Length: 264
Image 1: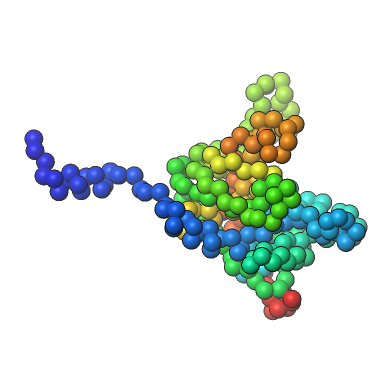
Image 2: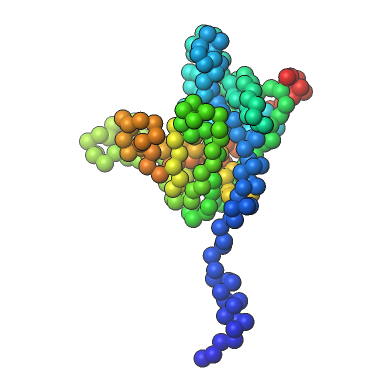
């Protein structure tokens, strides 16, 4: 049976997979995302260097709320004279802004920080329930932290799997009452991606390559050799907390005051 060429062309268009974002388009998205991404760390006057950072965060909402991982900021200001804060970069200049942790969600490894001064450009939170395996994503942050300096880097990734956040031990003899309790209760789902995250990428926004909307936040990587150097262990399998958990936490926060917006 002969099929008209125009019909073949139409069928090819219908069956063809969606094209990956072109490099020029992704470059524009990255340029729009980077001003919203900050390094998260601490300031201590008597320390050398006085500013140390070990994680990433990004602005949401009114631009004065920073999202990061709870494990990045836990006990960050426990030492007298040490202050939690974020480092804002842009046009070759660095600015340390003090921050206050206003919400901690340890179950989902999330933290909200509040800063003052000029608001940053907030990133849009996408509906993470719409994210599907095979979607092309990217994440921007500070891999290896102080080792590579204040140079935000972007990595591409594919959403490889939606997987339970809790993985039971292989050996049943290792089950204890606490683990059994987690097995009985339904664990929340998180994203597994095929991009390589490093220490310092914790808190990086995971976003759609085509528009920069955030579907998750990087929080851990599968490490082959946890005793190796910081750059030798990551396996190329990383994990992210879905953005809907971020939205739930952000919605708990009151609107910023004029004083917060105007304080230099």
